[in-house]
Amino acid sequence: ETGVTQTPRHLVMGMTNKKSLKCEQHLGHNAMYWYKQSAKKPLELMFVYSLEERVENNSVPSRFSPECPNSSHLFLHLHTLQPEDSALYLCASSQEPDREMNGYTFGSGTRLTVV
Amino acid sequence: GESVGLHLPTLSVQEGDNSIINCAYSNSASDYFIWYKQESGKGPQFIIDIRSNMDKRQGQRVTVLLNKTVKHLSLQIAATQPGDSAVYFCAENIAGNTPLVFGKGTRLSVIA
Image (cartoon, rainbow over all chains, first blue to last red; front, side):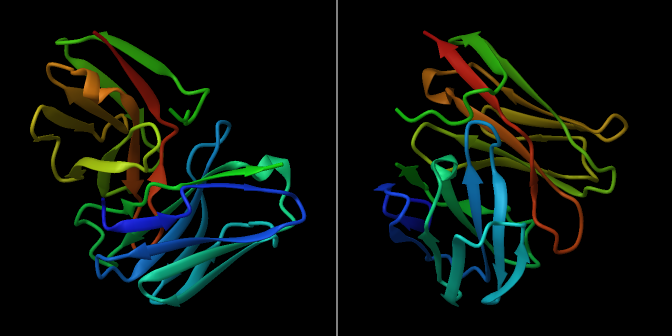
């Protein structure tokens, strides 16, 4: 347990489904991140939230929609995904600007399979 | 277990030997570096870090070396154990509030 909890651990969804990934951090951090990790492109940054405001959106398709209701929770809403979206989705948190205190803390990820 | 990064470079070492994992970073202005370990089915976990004003830092069985002249970072693992089998990533902090930049990773396989 790293202090960052992601649910579900595994998710299989059809291309017409709508689902959400959840991340919760218990570390008192003020920044949270979504990363996509696939075989072809390890660790792609998707979204960054700092103090609950989205500060970065790395040209992610609109079928991925993040939500950060408070500094402890982060969601990734998924709809009409494609098979190439199958990957491990990782959530991370950090304390900014004091990042030089062990960098980011990652959750265990959600393994997403789109069928 | 789950596979992460199927096309990563792989380093195979005999149990008990020392391992050296290398990373070339991208930006000469980077001021802070971290090594992460990712085991199958888990997220990356912090191993050790180093600031740019240092060239070596030691932890328990691990040492990180920084060569700023050639923008090179290495992770040395002493007496490698089967539990060290994982994918290892370096990350650099370029400056300010920009997100960490992660390397592609190296898969370490320990042969018992």
